[in-house]
Length: 146
Length: 390
Image (cartoon, rainbow over all chains, first blue to last red; front, side, top):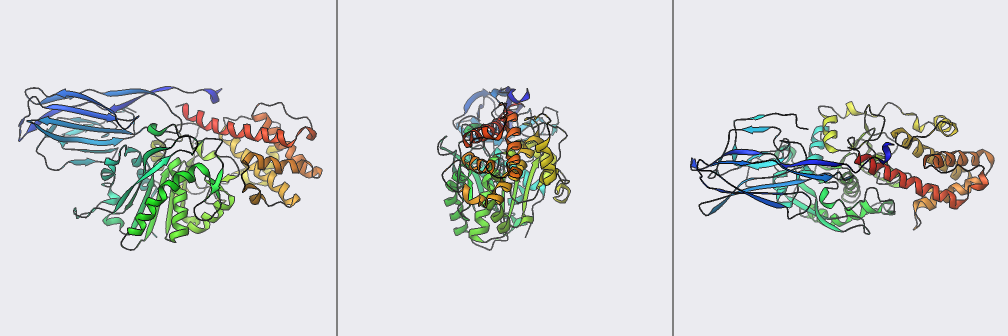
């Protein structure tokens, strides 16, 4: 009977893949140290580190978690990316989302991402989640990742 | 008084879940409703710290709501937006904890759900100081929330309307029942029936709990009932993302009162009680019938025995104790009353899989109480399980 059916495990995308190029004053930020932080089940969260190549290119793969669908609770995921370059730390991405599907942050996959570290103001993307970033992209490819 | 449209209210109820940590509140306040052209003046806001959880379950400190003034297009409008339970504070199962009883509301002193009240009370000092320090005139206070957040928003709206006497609007999505009939009546008249937008999917199990004597406000109204073709209660029907999809592009009028349901028509309730058809507890209509039938029979007994129903509920006894007391009284009354108690108990026993009592002598007060407790547990468990099915 459906009544006792339950406790199923579900996969949640905690951070959708992000690929792009980091620049500093228009030049590739070669070797920039990238720190991705995300949290959902506790305040501390977890961190992972990546490094940009000689051309400033970086690639952060999908971060997922398998969790037991908890009754009456929605998932709330925090995200932050900071870049360490030439001894200075730059905040390039921060936000929160409560969707679990791929590219739920922006509502699509960003194409040709560039993140200029000297950008003064971050752009807010609030249509699908609460995201603020100094990275820019050409377009978003929508995918049915629900 | 300004009214938010359904999409705006739903967006705010959804986006508040994205505020995973207090540092994201400023991002939340970049939403169009709070937007200001002059960047130097940020809207006055207080991030509400709340203890999430019933006293007995867990007292967890967590960001739970935002209190903010609207932006240039929403001047003089105050937004109180509350978040429901998240994975981080999931242990606080306030919504479906059958042990939770009644306490008194902060304003009207009518009985409300203890768990919701506790949650609201822990935020009240912050809300109060927000209003005390607020400079300017208030046009409207919008109280918004989904699920447990909707319950807390209801208590907040009641407080704003009754204590501050400010024009109040309440918008809830898939919210559980907050108080008893006296509370529902009192809050409906304080806020105004037309200012309460209660949105729910037909198959969302959360608005079906807690069972009677908890009722929804606006009192005696169906609320904004969203039709769903699915006959069974489901988790999907509760999730905020699906509420956003359901209200998209609609006006409040387009989501007006449901086509009249038979649940409040006495003869229909009698027919349901008399029918021998098997009961299916996973059907959303079953719980609506149960609720109507309990109310119907209790009122019948109370009228005959000249009991004040509400007065009986205000005490330290559990809800099941009280209803059992009334129903057991009904068994001793004349045949034309007791037969309805018998029929009701037969249905309820069937629903929880108990052997049905053969005659009314078997229906003692302790048996009735046992049936009601188990039924209540079943309803809560049902809400929980329905949400696990996703």
